[in-house]
Amino acid sequence: MSDLKGLRFSKDHEWVRLDGNRAFIGISDHAQHSLGDIVFVELPMLGSVLNASDVLGVVESVKAASDVYTPIAGKVVQVNEALVDHPEQINEQPYESWIAVLETEDASAVEALMDETEYEAFCQEE
Image (cartoon, rainbow, N blue to C red):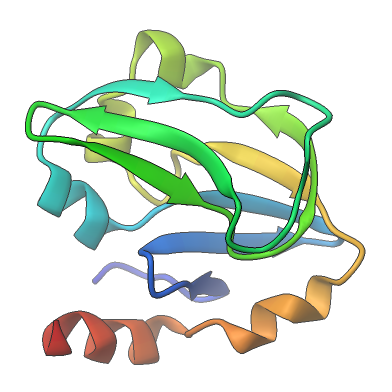
């Protein structure tokens, strides 16, 4: 894996990067490899309030469509519009190609997620 310091991971293969009370969320390199070539990304609505484990959006590949779940609760304050025209960015740069940014009231919730070492071990067990 590349340098993933500061990222936290869910068992559903989403990643979270905190910047203050803002949580950038995307899918992991493992997830994009499993999906194959991504051809469409459905982004969440701005202003949506989501609980942890709610559907954040959908990623479609040549193989399948897969829901993306939010690992933490928050309000959608930004979406990555570039993915609408260039969904393949998730394949090319999964840790730079966030799907949405949530403003969270409980940034400590990310501590319950896996760090990169725990996530790597989790992926090897699957």
